[in-house]
Image (cartoon, rainbow, N blue to C red; front, top):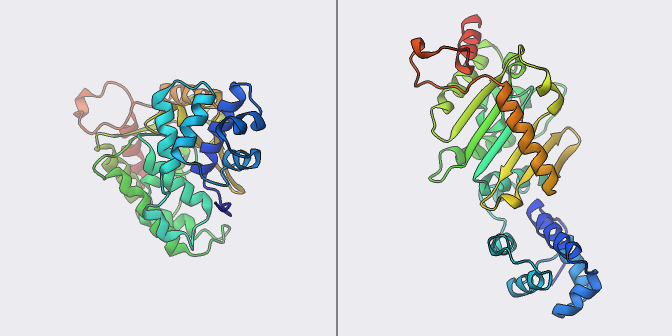
Length: 293
């Protein structure tokens, strides 16, 4: 079986999980491979995500490692057997591996928790807002229309039959950033209100008046699949993306997001009558900004 020239985040993650199980069992790669009848080199390639592993051998490895968590093992099997193909496959020629990994993570998530200090989250952006970002002179992006199409297609997960729950904390600063003219900003703010009507979407604004805690956390997205142990925290930066997968890292970002939600304004809730609003909330702040445009 040939080695992959490009390793997806899912493939890398499967190998990482198997290596972690082996190390927790106190076995060397040579000892583990010998027990299930494969070469040490083959196991090393599997742990690096460079080659696939048959389901029977994957389960055999988990048995050798003493892993009795059947839901977790089943999730590893599903990860191994996944084809990696989806709507994003049509964009492979024009989008980098980071964008494709992001689409696959979003597609497989049952829950997404995200914090953005300067941008409206990509899943919530209008086409004009996204285009204004892509055409910013300093960015120098190529294939703008293809990139825009890719971003709009990502948003289909919000309206599919089994959408993930999406909880976003957006800093007030992001609402003031001028990507496009006043009409573009107005349309984007109204889009947030519209999306908040969806039962699986929660949007909170982190106001300037709150503690500066949000300024220290940076932007991140936490993707939680059916088995939460296989969650991923994505950190995006101009020079590339980082994927955090260690258990302690996932816990730290769960705690971090909970702190952000506690300090942010109450979520946008269009079902409440004006007289029922006893405290400042996210909707009131957005309405105030709309008034000033």
